[in-house]
Image (cartoon, rainbow, N blue to C red; front, side, top):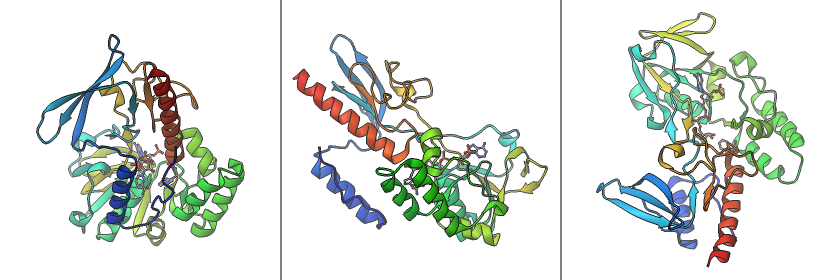
Length: 318
Ligand SMILES: NC(=O)C1=CN([C@@H]2O[C@H](COP(=O)(O)OP(=O)(O)OC[C@H]3O[C@@H](n4cnc5c(N)ncnc54)[C@H](OP(=O)(O)O)[C@@H]3O)[C@@H](O)[C@H]2O)C=CC1
Ligand SMILES: O=C(O)C(=O)Cc1c[nH]c2ccccc12
């Protein structure tokens, strides 16, 4: 099997869409856009998977039949908003990062971004650029890198031990950003690639947020303890008033809600049951790609394993 080697790196949106179109054409993929899978279940008698697919524009439900089923709906499927005491009575606006489009309407407002993953860090930068008085909650250590550094790391780790690559990535990142501890951003003990492999936590690619935090244009705050009206209280007792809170607090898998008979592969959280590296397949032609919290490299690994396995059982099946 061959894969395109011309994957885009830093190109405008229309060229990226063109890349996807070329990909579809090259592999003869027929996407069903605007389609919601309501359920997938295994028919023991016919030895196949039945999927109920609702056309979101017409609401017509179509039934698909397939010998193989690949769950690729991802770890980032439904918005995760934490339970914080007093949140339901918060006097301002609350929004999850998945619905955030632009900081334009937040100009001049006091906005708190909760979460310092890539979504939170990008949104904080956008809000500050639109003139919002921006704060961000950074409750845990995080690896901030540049896109060049992580790209280099992902290439080197195919040839060099992970600890050596992590050492290099940390040195380079420290050289670029300096020690950010006094700005509220602390590096985790584990290196960036090992942290991803062990905990699923991604590095954050800086888009300018770090510079604004150093300038004080974006305020870095610790964990929230409670909310009272429009006041947010932080651990340590600090209190600030906010007009809006953006929850960039990540996502959950939803595969367990629509996949019936998936017990051989998925748990109640919609993530795989089996330990890595044997997690990507279940019974009766069931597969998953991208539920192992191993980032882009993990998704590629699952996709190749699933495709090769389907190919070999397809040949023995026909
Ligand atoms: N440009 C890009 O390539 C982008 C990539 N992405 C990717 O998409 C995926 C999803 O990213 P994202 O939406 O950022 O979600 P993530 O799961 O990566 O990050 C969620 C963040 O929310 C924090 N959080 C969760 N609950 C709380 C809480 N109660 N109080 C304070 N903080 C909290 C987490 O902190 P803690 O670690 O302490 O739990 C973490 O910092 C990731 O793989 C990411 O790398 C996203 C945006 C842009
Ligand atoms: O593959 C992942 O998820 C990583 O953690 C590394 C990575 C590659 N490209 C990225 C873009 C945003 C955040 C992390 C990565």
